[in-house]
Image 1: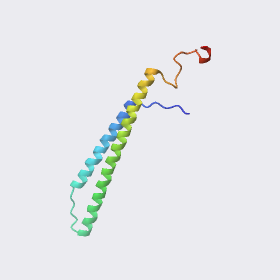
Image 2: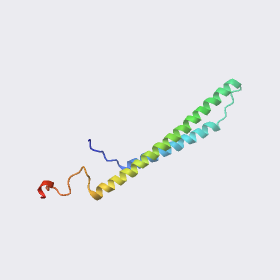
Image 3: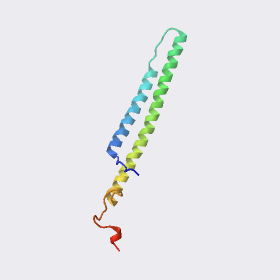
Image 4: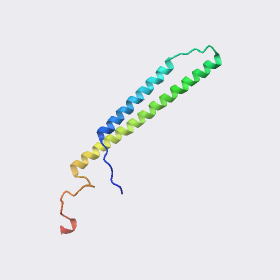
Length: 109
């Protein structure tokens, strides 16, 4: 089994924060997009423009939801990495060197 690479909880927190900020920016952009009113003067063209704007705003809201989900997953990974790191520091890393170098189990008898 390959060795697990330790995850830096601070880096994960920074990534989660960036995802949260990006989600907020996407939501704000969807609101701004809907706030703009453009009058084309032609009913069929206006309907097409309105539909395009609605679809773009929907896509931005979906992006916001996805970024929020990802942020939550990264935050959970950060908590798990912090817990794993603390446990490894307290009890010794199972993949690391023995707490008693030079002593082997078969020589204890």
